[in-house]
Length: 118
Image 1: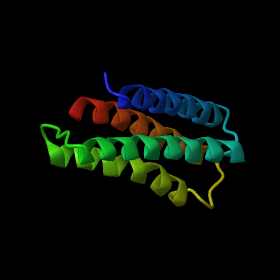
Image 2: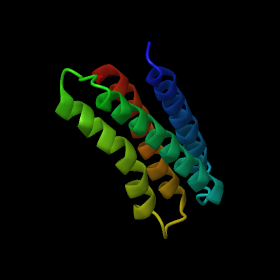
Image 3: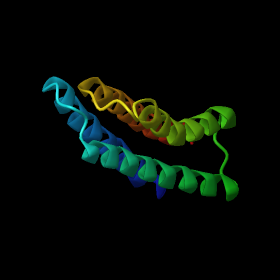
């Protein structure tokens, strides 16, 4: 077990937490609260830590079976949440919480996939 394993599981678990919070907002048809954006940006920070750690592992000579797939997951991990948040930047409606929730789930899945492809 490498040092990246707990980081990836923390990212995945936190992503589920953010998605659940977003889902509650959609269920109650409430406007997207500012704290949900803060949770999403914290998820982005955690994903960036995972990516930096994985890049460090690559720099130390560890090569995954499919380098291109692994690098694609690393890129997606840090791109999905900012793109989702920028697309709903001016929309505070309840469905914008759904966009944040789906992006959070995708980030969590990508974190697990990073573990599987390394």
